[in-house]
Amino acid sequence: MPETTPPTEPTPDEPAAEPAAEAPATRGRRGLLLKVVAAVVVLALVVGGGITAALALTGPDTHTLTLTKTAGGMERDTEREKAGASTLSAVEKQVVDNIEGKVSYTRLGLYTQDDEKRGPVGPLLFVGVKLATPVEDPATLLADFRSRAKANGFEVTSLDTGDDSAGACAAQTEGQKAAICAWATRDTVGQLFPTAVGYSRGQVAKLLTDVRADVERTD
Image 1 (cartoon, helix red, strand yellow):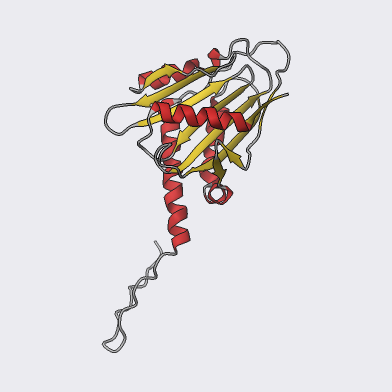
Image 2 (cartoon, helix red, strand yellow):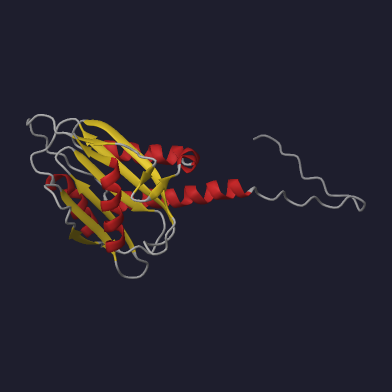
């Protein structure tokens, strides 16, 4: 065991040095990491085994996912993404590992929600997945999401996506409110995770719909 040197006591003429104040930027990065970790915990609890992709040989679909500068009226925060890069990589790995089927690519981005009328202020984590081979029925991609959310005590409801895709939200309505929403097409999945507590299902559903309009394209 290596020896340690005991701390030197200050002399009467030498006042003890005060601990250096933590830089605001450092505090902000640490706070962000805690919030993103919270999103990862929710992801693990609710999605668990992840999205199940029952692949069908029906040819490629036409959707693409792009992390835009703004999505749903919210600015993308690339600086916060850099600060939480290792945590976001862990989320990405978990998502890819949990999908039964080949993933073409993933898109993870943090968007700043700063309008109290839309919900609690704070970053939202968008997780998008593009499948290399489409599924026959988009609802199959969310089946595991639904069952695991229910198993963890979340109320699950369908989300009207307004097209031939499928949508679902998982919400905790008792105690501290929390919600996650997702959509799925035959070849894409998008999920939105608030990193601040207090969101209702309706608030996250609206934000997801707005974000989708900017990050998903149909060729």
